[in-house]
Length: 431
Image (tube, rainbow, N blue to C red):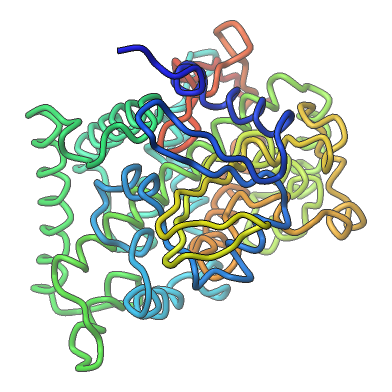
């Protein structure tokens, strides 16, 4: 089969495709494949804000998003309308600011346990370490579960998900459903993942002594007559939070270790700020480290874990002067917009110092959206931010990290933005 030139370029390098499109095309661009599939790319913060914030009710998650996240079932990431509002209302208290204080203690403790296994001068695969650590954190904080026995299941599921979603990205929606892309091994892994989640739910229900974590809140909500929450839906919510929670934060951390290693002047400045604490960081400490916050924002700008968002309009409407038929596929790319020279000076340069209050105030809303925007903004944004900061500060106080493979590391656009070939680094204990 002969591929359309657009389709060929997109399959070869999706990230470069959107960068090229953003630099050479109007703010609203339509491209079509040989198959007739049409996609509208939003290339300006005003349009992104209009779809995600101002007219959010007129747009649903797109075929692209459902294909990417189809293995999670109908969790909060994919549900729509009144059901989504119910789920959001039920889950929001688990991410309240006051709860983050308790979560921070778990994050620090688990990070220290991870570091206790690091040997001076050994080579660690930071991608694997960060995935294992964030899995432990989200499982314990959200569901009061120790994830050790389930790590292999989760690891296989993540590897499978990256493989399948990678096929979808490079085939650009040629795979209309999650399951046809899987072989029998893939279906077996997903079944094991579902059984793992169902087992933990059944154990908690049988135990009877519900706590105040997210799983307890959802179980208690099931007894409320006005709440529609089946066991399958409960399983989908748990699976969504675990999968999305560990992969997005893990990848944000992985890219930060890479960026700090490539920019020793930034690393030195950040270490000096962290060392000035003179003690192990706690929840209050990480709220008052301004350079850490700048590094966090700049890392997410250059390497956003979620690098593309899809929407489709529910009914026929007009957007930016373009008439859209129902279910038109729209895409917005954090990867492209957050590297747009119209809004970011030296857009490809890692420069945390750009994030001053004045710069943030001048930045158009919609130019920077690593956690999305509007009513569908990531529910776990606060959790992920505290987790990132607790882990970075705790590691930096104890170890130096040195890349052991040639740079640059190529980003791989799967469900999240992964490091192609992993991130092996030599860890050296600080004296």
